[in-house]
Structure formats: C-alpha cells, structure tokens
Image 1 (cartoon, helix red, strand yellow):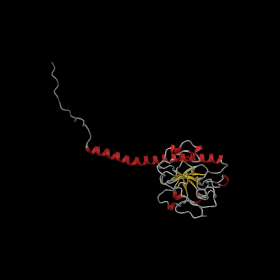
Image 2: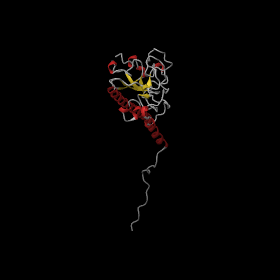
Image 3: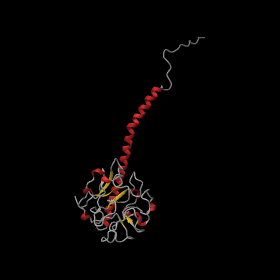
Image 4: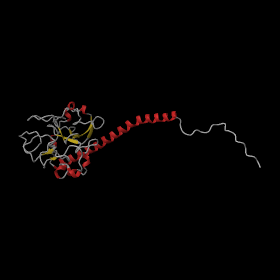
Length: 258
C-alpha cells in the first residue's frame, strides 16, 4: 500500500479570524465621521418636509378663505365673532362705537366663533381632537374643509398652529375690492392663538392695531422659528411663502399699501 504523504507545514500562515483593535477603531471612526456628515442632512430634510407640509396646509386654508369670501359677497372672514359680548370693537362685534379690549385668550361666551377650530375655554396647548370642536367651535371656515389637521402646523402641538391677522389695515373683514396689496400677510404660523396683532399691553381706544414688532418677539411666539429660523405665511393672493422674521416690513401687513 502506498504510504500517506508526510504532513508538511504550509509556507503561508493560516488566515486570521476577526479584526485587530486598530482595525475596529478605524471602522468606528469612519462610521462616526459619516454620521456627523449625514445626521445634519437628515435633520435638514426633516425640516424641509415639515415646511412643505405647512405650505400645503396654508394653501388649503387660503382656498377655504377664498370660498368663504365668494359666498359672503366678497367680504373676508373675521378672526372671531363674539355675539355674547356686544359693543366690543377689539373682538370685532356689533357696536364699533365702543372700544373694549378683550384679549384673544379670554373666552367671551359659549357662542364665540373663531375663523379656525379653536375653543378659548380650553388651554391653547395641546392640540385637541376633532370631536372637541362641536358646532360653532369648529370655526366659520368649517364648511370649506374636511380635515382638521390642516390647522395643526408641523412642529407645534397647539389647538391651531396658525393665526389670522387682525391688524387695523389688514385684509380681515374687508371687501375684496378694498385690498390693493395682494402680497399682504393674511394668515401665518403662530404659537399662541388663532389671532395675531400687537397685544403687548392694554390697547388704547382709538389707536390702530399694529403688527407685533419683530424686535420685541424674543420668545418667537408671533413669528416662530419653526422651519430653519423662519415661518410660513399665507398671502392674500393665496400663495404661501417661507419668511424670515427679520425681513418683515410694514407693507407686509397692510392691505391698503401695495
């Protein structure tokens, strides 16, 4: 019988199993570098997605306002009505000869109706489910939309993430023919209530409601940094646009100045 060949050691070493510590550290460093590069990109993509969602919401709200205006002889909706409290100009009720300032966070009665689904008897935050807005609490635009979610701005967990301007020279409550500035801000992202004007203190009778100054908005409540240090606004012409608060000017808020 032939004898088996004797065992001879290979001239090449056996393949190693596993990695050395140096190799593992190199891999970890590479992964950390990639994560540092990609995570900000993912965050920016998420912010842009939220911004796009908010732009879509405001365009739908703009269509609802336009349909309301068409059904009411070309007159724009008001930010709220207060039939239980007569003689309140700042609440925009029945008797404009009497000036009584009612803060937007104060309920004026069970029949109070806002332009958007909002209940002033409940906390501004958090967001409420649709069933929490029965009847007039659903707002005057309710016949023109089917989804309450269009009023929930991405990145803000409040009842309504947008506010309608009730500035003296704004488009609210005006006939369409009086609005000569199609770029005037009508609705924008907000972090308080569905109405926005200069509410820093008691409003003096006979003086106009002015836009809240950007320099005084340290808490970013009236012009929130919701999307890359900016907010989304709806203009009177129905277009929605991202804005940086620092770029706001007086003409942005006036329906009478083109």
